Length: 296
Image 1 (cartoon, helix red, strand yellow):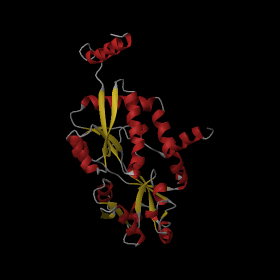
Image 2: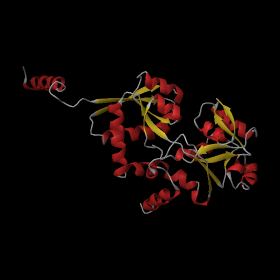
Image 3: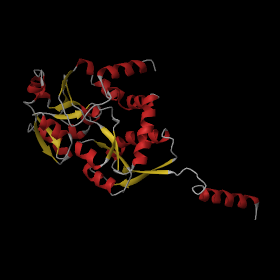
Image 4: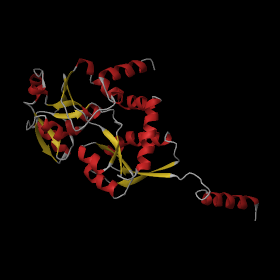
């Protein structure tokens, strides 16, 4: 047997024996890899965070994308439960936290609950007069039919019209069947520039804030993976890479909204508790990290 061939056989045998000799088991982590261009672009942020967490977890791992044409978050719960994949980033709800195992570190720093509004330009003068939540409740909002934000708004006494059609949500505001489409400060600037939002503008003065967050979720009994992700995320927060990555992705669109000049109207959602304020978005935190990057 030639030396090269013998060495190849030796290394292959060593790899096969590694688990028997006490070698660390590789943690395979499957996640949904959606082929739709819009969602693939959005999901890239969460995939990178998952990889950052696993890299810092101390576990050898292999990240595997499971190709899907599309998904709804409701369906993803079932796919996680049936172990079609192992981890997914989902907008948390009380029901979802019972059905799956959440890692309660807000991947978006809770900024998904900071909402600006897409409105018709001729409605700006009406919104100029709004000073409180009670004033805002006179406007009708649109929401997707199964979005977790709708119960938050309804519990706080807001009027909500729902639709299962994404384009239809924008159209309802254009046609004045509703007066506002609340979108997070992370996404509203990009969406306003899309053709689907033609005829709508970003309202100039207000932010509606309520507790909301994307968490990583795993199947209820997948304790090892949950612990690895949590360990890695905490290290990412501690070494600053988490906040740096958030600002790199969202610093510009948030800055464009000029939060300092906007009135923040806060509403409650007792079902979602904020335990560690340092993990969550605030105007003060954003101004500090923006100043840190000003000279870069």
